[in-house]
Every structure is written in C-alpha cells, then in structure tokens.
Length: 201
Image (tube, rainbow, N blue to C red; front, side, top):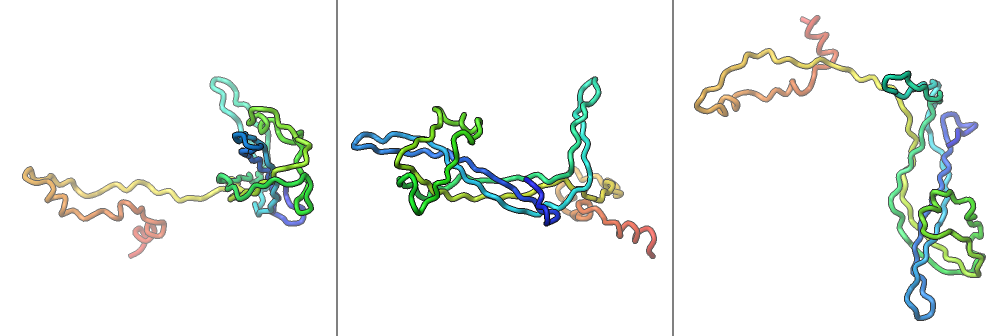
C-alpha cells in the first residue's frame, strides 16, 4: 500500500493472489495423473483512506518489568482483502506462446517460500511446448481500515423508584399481568430530556 502522490488521502493497493491448481492429466489410455501447479494474478486498485496526522505510540505489557516500547508508527490505514474460493471457469492446453495469450509468466524464483511450501514437491518451470491456461472467477472485497475516535454519550443506570408490591400467594401471575411493560427503562433518556426535566416548567 502506497499513498497516491497527487490525490491527497488516496492510496494504491498492490495485491498478488496465488492459486493452487490441481489437474487430472490424461496420457494415452492410462489412468489420469494428478498434477499440481500455481497460478499468479496481480491486481492494483486505488481507494480513499483519508489522512491521519497523529503519530501512535504503544507499549507491550510485561509483568513485573518495565513495559517494552513499540516502535513509533504513523496513523496509516490498513488494507484488508476478503476473498471467497475462486470458481474454475475454463482450462485448456495450448502452445507455449500463442498469439492470443500473453507470454508473461511469473518466474518460480519470485514465488515466496511460504507459497512453495504448500506443495509436496518442488515447483519447476517446465520449458515445454505445451502449457495449461486456467481461467478463474474471483469475488473479492478490498477495503482500507483505520482507527478513529468516536464520541459516545454515556448515561447512568436507571434506578426504579416504585415500591415493591408483594404478590398474592394465590396467583402471582395476575399481579404481573397488571404491571405495564417498562419501555422507558430499556431506552435511556437523551441529553435534552435531562435539561427539560430539571429546568422547564
């Protein structure tokens, strides 16, 4: 994530998706052989994330010891991407460099080690005449999040002022049915209600 130079409050987000693809490959009349590979997709978007002028200082709590000071950071937004499982739309075998398809492929050396560790074997970039091109449908939600300060009014608890009426030993439910539901107890009064009750005629 990087700020856009000439659009204040906007940020560009570079997202790289890695897809683990599993294929059943048929050779001659034998049983299909399972082959795994990785597909890479890059996406770049720009979103408004506002500005934060403040600097944030934090410390991590240590029991019976001075708190460790965490490095100072600016109040930048945080990029969050939500993704559902992709939908396989098509797969086809074609020549290595077809006129209709781009030959720009991701080198194996540029794939992070954590992604390579998801595969049992070693990823190799086969230099063969045939390649498999896969089309996937992907639904994502990309957003920028930042900590903001909110002012929320707080009110005291409402203390009931009515006297407790003892129920009759015959049927206590009859007494309860006569009591009106205390709607106001579930909705605290607002600020103007306090001033009006105290100062208005």
